[in-house]
Every structure is written in C-alpha cells, then in structure tokens.
Image (cartoon, rainbow, N blue to C red):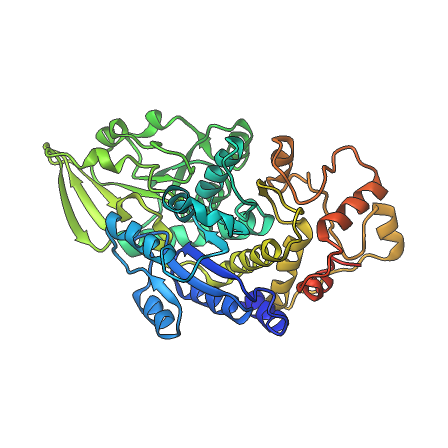
Length: 456
C-alpha cells in the first residue's frame, strides 16, 4: 500500500489526527489493518466494527486486538451480532468518538437512532460506499444531517480505481473460488453499468462470456451499447442467462418473480455494497429448500427440483468470497485518511452540515503517490504551455466539471464542494476559489498540503 505508507511516513511527525477518536465500520481485512495502524501513527484512537458479516478476516481482527485496537467483528456474524458489534464499538464509558469512518451508512444510522447526542462532539463523517452516500444525501435533503460529511465514493480515484479496476479483477476471482466455473460461452446479465458494472462486463467479455446489460440511465446505457453489450430489460433474458450479477446500489433489482423464472443452476450474486439488490428474504419460505454446499454457496431448491446457486446470501461477492487487490485498496484508504485529516483539522465554518467532495487536487495527490510503483514519469508543462491552457503547472489539471468523473453531474445536482461554485467564473476567480478551497489556514496539515501542491 505505497501511498498509505508514504502518507504515514510524511505525516506521523506532525500527528495531524492527535486527539481524534475515530469510530469505524468497514470491511476488516489486512488492508484495513494498515489503514488503522496509519491512523494510529497519525495520532488517532480507533474503535472498529465490520460493515459486512462475511468479509471479516478473523486472523486480522485478532491481530488488531492484540495490538491494542478495539475491534468488534468476526466472520459469519448473525444480523443480531452485527448490530451488537456496532453498539459495543460506539457505546463505551469514558470514550466518545469525534469522527466517523463508515462504509454503507450502518454506523451513522445506528448513532442517529440510538445515540443522537453524540453528534454534539462529532466533527465529521467520511463515507465510502454509494449506499452510505445516498443515505447522507437523504439526511441532508431532509435537514437532518448534524455534521459535515465527506463523500469519498464519488472522488475520482475511488470511482475509477476501486470501483472499476478492482471489480474488473475481483469479479472473476469471486466466481471462480465459489463455483469453479468456466466463463467461455456463458450468458451473463449485469444489472447496472456504472463503474462497477463496467469493470464486471469488461472482465466477463474478455473471458468469452456473452454479456447483457440492464440500466436505467440513458447515458450509461448508451455507453454499454457503444462498448458492444446488448442493452435489455431483465425480464427479457432472465429465462436464458447462466449468471445474474447486480451492481446498482438499489433495492429489489432481482425480485422473487425473477428468481422463479430463472433456469436450473443459474448463479445469482451481488457486486454492490448493500444486500438489498437481490430479494433474498423472499426465498426463505417453507416451499423452498436451502442447501449449503460450501462456504458462501447455497443451493435454493424449488418443489419441482429446479435450483439456483446463490453466492454470499446476496452480499458483496468479492469481499465475502475472495479478496481484492491491495494496490487498489491503498488508493481508497489513502483517500479516506486524507478526508479524515481534512475534516478533523478544518477551521470552524469551512464546512457546514452538508455533504462534500474532496478537492480534485487531493485526488491528483493520491494518484501521484502511486505512480512510483510503475516507475512512471509525469510530463511537466512548460510555463508557456501552462499559460496557454490557463493552468497551474502543479495542477489541478482538469476542471471540476470534466466528464471522466461523476463530479459534473453532482455540481449540476446542487451537491456541495468545499469551495464556492465555479460555474461561470473566469480564470482569476477560479484561482481565487481554489485558494479558498485548499485553505490558507494554519493547522497541522499545512506541510502535507504544501507537498500536495495545495498551498502556494
């Protein structure tokens, strides 16, 4: 995890998180352990629970506990265990969190529900997943968001590297480990063509599968068509496909009606964060038989003998049934750490009780930290070229409405950034806004911001 280790080395002398009490709810893996150790090296105290009942690595949780971290998680928790662990993580005498790091919104939801007074001392929330981000925007829209929140999921590095490239590799690993199947010639329907869906489709197509896509967004739908995939409604292909993969972040994408119509031995799995995409609850009825054939693999058998293969009970496939590349998680973890540092150290008044995105310059900083891994060498603009393009030689190199990221749509949807609106501004005003967003405030992360090119 090169960037995270570089961040630890550069910042541990300053202790930018000194006094921070971070309560976290994420996947507990070896990579999360490195993140927690980094946060500790930067001065924070941490207590942790798992955001997924199947993704915890017990040996990692045990090692963290032996190292002095308070961790409440084990692989294979029940639903009651899951909420008990979150409650134990939060409800402790003599210790109250002042920062939240969440993946899915369950921890934030629990504190709102059970301990709302805690938000009087909490400085901010950092959220990683699309599910949790949706929840935050709903709270903000309803005027119920009590503290500033940072949307890490829609940062460029998270979208492009964790969601796209990570899922492009881990979808095949998860399916292979659980089913030992061959992909050539198999008919697959992928529900959703966002970054996760794009990664899944590219991997399966490369292995010789026939891939169909379902999508509600006409722009993503057109992208799927231009990438060579047939756009369909799920009802049109549900009887013929061999594999159904959901990655929408929505609920009831695959309903009991769809499950009833599937062919024998159809494989059903989810690559979205939440377990709501597949209506698993509808399968727990007396007329259907559940048969556990191996870890995370269930056969659901109909009265006529038809069976479907359900993976991880509809939960996140790659982290429940396999692993994900450490390099990609380094990108996400570094972004999370920077977001925590930013919110914790921000002067009063910089952030209101709303949802924000990280400055693009911070995205570029995270990407830059990973380039040495590839022995990559960036081309530098000359003064003349920078002047011609109207750019600072040190970045940011793209405007915030640039279309390779989801940011433009977020701007037009009224989502907040930690700087004034850039719409319709000239070059000098744009630079002034960027100076505002990157901050000329004297707090402990000034040296980090200088290294990232965030300060003059």
